[in-house]
Amino acid sequence: MGLDMYLSAERFSSGSNHASEEEKSQFAALLKASGLTRKDISDVSPPGRVRFVGRVRFVVGYWRKANAIHKWFVDVVQGGEDKCMPHDVSRVQLQQLVDECKKAIADKGKADSTALQPQSGFFFGSTEKDERYYAETQETIQMIESILNNPKFEDWSFEYRSSW
Image (cartoon, rainbow, N blue to C red):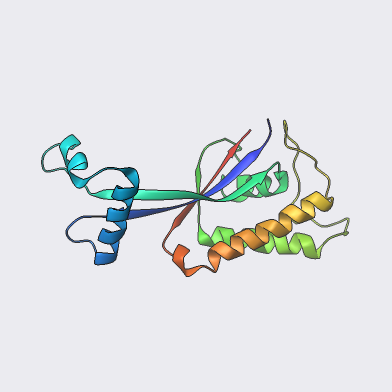
């Protein structure tokens, strides 16, 4: 038991006639990976309402008991409400998280630092700014920067979800 945290990336792909060739190719790959065919989809859809749209979702970030990172998501993305529900995260917000993590590392050892504060909670782990805290913070910077700097993620949407 404990605080598990997930950042997912999601992208839609269309196989409709007006989609680009790249989208149609991606949609065909999704169908192949799923084991379905266009006919399988059209057979279960009402006549005239067939939508050849699929989505792919990957977990691109995972933390365990990184309560300071979780608190940041709750405060900035979830409006202060700590509910184990999915919440959309913008690229701007992800950059803000990177900036906050960098500030926390720059403030290491400063007693008056307010950057990236830990929070207590049921099975949330340590609330100390110890080596684990700084390791999680550095890993978060690397993870999020690799997503933001990868041009292949430019048109993906992101979602944060926690479980505890």
